[in-house]
Image 1 (tube, rainbow, N blue to C red):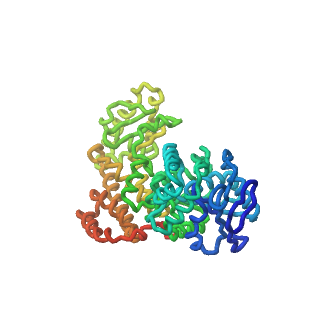
Image 2 (cartoon, rainbow, N blue to C red):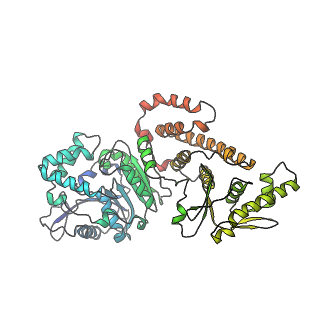
Image 3 (cartoon, rainbow, N blue to C red):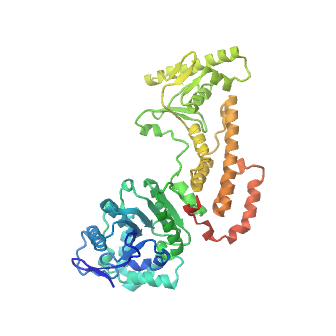
Length: 519
């Protein structure tokens, strides 16, 4: 067995050097475990990469007799540096399991000259102090074997005798001092924005310790990351589903750059939980945003009751008179600028030019007066009206404009299927704008028809792509949401009935997502 002599212990490691010029995959297990958790994964990785596993200080076969643990992370850095110097490694990919992922995140700023990517397996980006205290209290009340036996079942799914044996052996060798090895606050709450290398996050579907949806949400704080859920697995995903983890890992490593943050939502409860916790697309309504903006923005809220905001305060006025709100929203759609001819064409298509010009002159005068009557002087000069046209001189945002932009993004061929799926569900959750009842202009009637047609087209496009990949859970959620925009009456109900039998037989392996398949 290879060991590397350290100051007060012998560091156990196992290195497979298939070709010295190739990158090395370095596997870092979490606290309480040892390198045996990788034994099912390694044979599936082939020989395109060298592999290095090791038992970190005080774990497995890296036995430590000293009681000094105050500088534990520094010790981990020291032993990692010793390993890469001893083996002459110049290009590595770090794969960390559970808190081993936190260690990998901590290593990156120090060793970023050789670390090319990070893979985090069920990594807790934050751990409640209460959880740590409960585990420490439990450890004190049970014998070592009882503790290992009780805890082992939490980390694996399904809990087979073979996997349980591996986990219990690792936990049984853990003494109280080892359990209390500290990972400092900086590691448990790393500055994810500083991580600029590609990152793969894999999380077990049934991880009871560190919920999967938390990991997915943290992925949004990483510049260059993808996040995936591994079905039918718990915390130790590499032990539970080595064949799936190896596939995702190898596909990830073969890509030079991660272009999309991608989330595979195949479980309806999980999907709902994520959307309840945070909007992955961004809210359709943002009337409080002005207070957080450095530069004041005129914000137009059209959903529900019409309202204009300036620095978080409603701009009061007779917006329902003389097409005031219609003209303001129209300007928002055209970056604040429109010629008189354009407005006449859109708002007065059936009137003579003379009557249309007269009506527009009255309406623009009324809109101008609404800003003139405001106490804030910055609003008094919000409009510039000339013989040629009108210009809104303030930065403007409108929830309806944002909605249409999000809708248009669903037809972007460079956007992944799951990203479009999430955006589409978010648009449906945002609700209807009821443009026909809120606005009188024919332009808004046409806009409402266009939105409905594009929603239906987006629905069918996403449905067909999900169907090709057998993503049954996503299809069912889609259909339950889409009755108001279905291509013909009864389509959603009929399709759901057809999926009923298939749902009971579906093999969850069919809904695994691989970006290598073009998602």
